[in-house]
Image 1 (cartoon, rainbow, N blue to C red):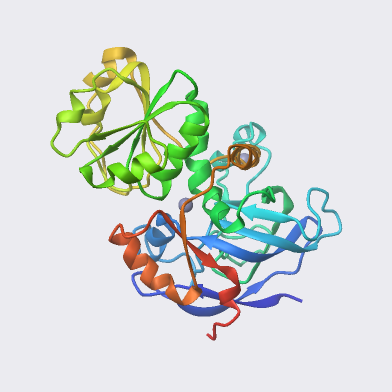
Image 2: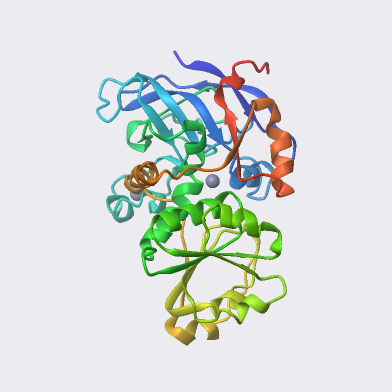
Length: 355
Ligand code: ZN
Ligand code: ZN
């Protein structure tokens, strides 16, 4: 029998979220059922809800893609997880598993299109859409569920499932490590984990921010340097310095301003989501043989690798824990940049909701 669970969702784009109930499917042979302990609030949840990505794919739509919970039921053929395991689910819950990109462990780039944890047609349940982590429980295929090390604080680990892997994957791919200089643009949910991950990898880390306002916060996170970009002076000094510039800002910036800071064969990477165009001048790319790259969260195996790395290096998000009833206020505060650095919803508070 499908189970009805309490959740928090949007009935219409651009409207506040409200308590809803949704159905979770029966646990199939390869599925696990998870009691959701914590779910982070990511900026792209808000993009879906405010209509930036178009009309809602389904109504109500339950967002949430930074999920940590405990397994309460396993399907008959499940081998990777057991009842009681602490586990996580991030942005996706399925992919074709057979295309070149899936076989390369990069299911986020599935050539058939991955199944998002919410708002995607669900191949496991024809006619239904997936629903996310702002809810009491979730059922998902075991292959898209990762193990969360018990040494991590489960609430502070939740944002690793999207923000953490989103910064870890490109930092790793472009060689962040000892002797490398990494600049992080923007000090929000993504950026603060970018600083922590790059430091844990052994890189020399600079935070680039518009004003002086976040200097103390950046240094407290472990940054080695801080440079203010608002008056433009940082763009000429330091020049030819960074191996990697990680752009975590969810708004258009002018890449040409930043590219001059990249040293030989340096790469600027966009991970923040913006639906606005960004003008890219070619000439600064030609100098120093620079690259401009993008990266979309990460594959399942590298998400597991990231969680194990986070446990080894004691990297988690700085969070503010809230109850389900505070989600709309949290959205307003995120839009006002009033959070250090991630809101995480206490999953037990969904139980008290009445739709
Ligand atoms: Zn996200
Ligand atoms: Zn695929």
